[in-house]
Image 1 (cartoon, rainbow, N blue to C red):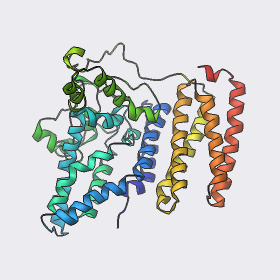
Image 2: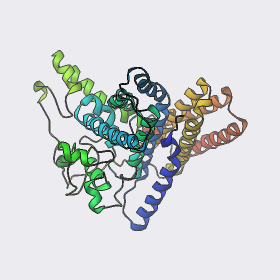
Image 3: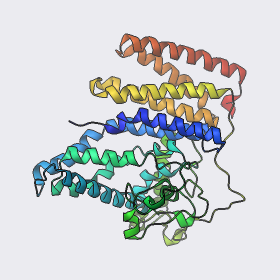
Amino acid sequence: MKVDYIALSVPVFFILIGIELAYNFYKKLNYYRLNDSIANLSQGIGQQLTGIFMKTALFFGYKYIFEHWRLFEMPKTIWVWIILFIGVDFFYYWFHRMSHEINALWAAHIVHHQSEEYNLTVALRQSWFQGWFSWVFYLPLAFVGFDPIMFLTLSSFNTLYQFWIHTRAIKSMGFLEYILNTPSHHRVHHGSNPKYIDKNHAGTLIIWDRLFGTFQKEEEEVYYGITKPLASWNPVWANLHYWDDLVKTARQSPKITDKIKVFLKPPGWFPEHLGGFQHAPEIDVDGYRKYDPVYQSKLTGYVLVQFIVALAAGSAILFSYHKMETLALISGTIFTLLTLIACGALLEGKAWLVKFEYFRLMLGILLLLLLKFPVGYQVIFAAIQLISVIWFLNLQKANPNTDEN
């Protein structure tokens, strides 16, 4: 039986985020910003929803190899569990490292590195497309004969382990820094400082970085994010922007070989006629500014309510999708993603926001009429949509120029 340990852990994630947030306010640390945190969580919600449509197929890819081409029959003993744990962590290291060293893979993984903050919400900032290729790195384990359910369990726990290391609240863990991937090690991994880039790819055990020459100790202050900031709260654009850069570079390259290399070379690689390899710039400490566009403060409450709607809808889908009809599943997912896009646009004051928001609200009402949801859900959702329409209308009356920002 498959158990989605990551989905089951979502309530724990939010409890821990709440604890870190309270600590942040108590110590006045400024580790959190509303816009950045919503953008991070939006990526997590989107990743879980889009994953619904591919996770079964990917699991059966591993399972098919195990059932038809495995070389050994591995017993389910404690020692095999331990060996598989090490194996999963080893192949995670190489998947993660290659995701930083091959442009086509970085185009997906880059999403996780876009935040200019570092807190527990960043752990949930995940690519919507990375799962399409990450599973391939683990296939040697299927050929050897490690049971698919054992693999799925340990790979889930490898992912779960990495949640807590996305924090600045824990400085050093003493001798464990030599063995485990810790918050200090992973802060380095998220740094855009040239000396920190492409370091500390570990999942659970830092020993792989020490063995393969990619370890870097946390020394100077870490500046988080990517070398060319995303400068957007749009969750869809966050997943596509680097692909857009790669395609544009390929189009500017007359040679077929250069077009191919654009996708296979490391980030920073360009053909000679475009200037050749571009190294990461040093941090301009005096000129450093985080992306933080001004938006109407009166929108804060509305954004929070809409985000909670998206979170609730996404959670409901995540825990009941196997019982939902296909049309309801697709429609619910689309509405949730549109709501996340609207939250980002509200926080940026986008010019197209007003028409988009009215369209989204009307779509929600239309879906309510067309789809057969339980009566309780219909009543709650209808009330929320009605309140949202009235609320947004009043916001527009108070700020008639919002759509001109």
